[in-house]
Length: 130
Image (cartoon, rainbow, N blue to C red; front, side, top):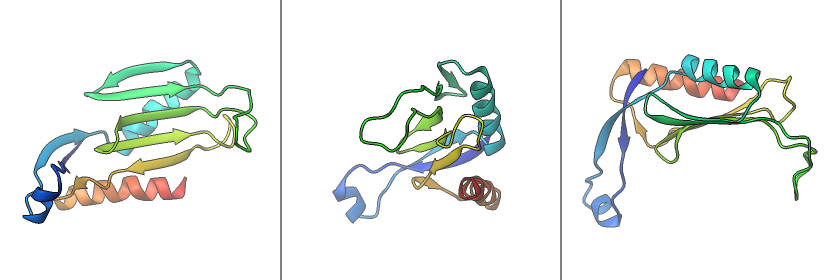
């Protein structure tokens, strides 16, 4: 688990006076997320749950074309978190036997500790490589 803070926007008036509340939260480390994603993907069944307070969902691949898309199947998707607070998804858009595409949405997280900054950089670097 990684300790972080999340910025909460309460509207333009708070932004103008420079008061944006920050709330402490705990998020999963990327190795924990990856382990959950691959465990769900290996089972290959629809899965919805809550892990350490965050919603987790997995939808397996479906062999049917997606309207208005070049894909001939609906890819398997794993997600954890709540957008726009913090969210990570793994999408097997090149097929269920290929490496997934990883999307990390964490722009509202605030890094205050050097270890937190390194941990978030690890998450971002992983997402960029995959």
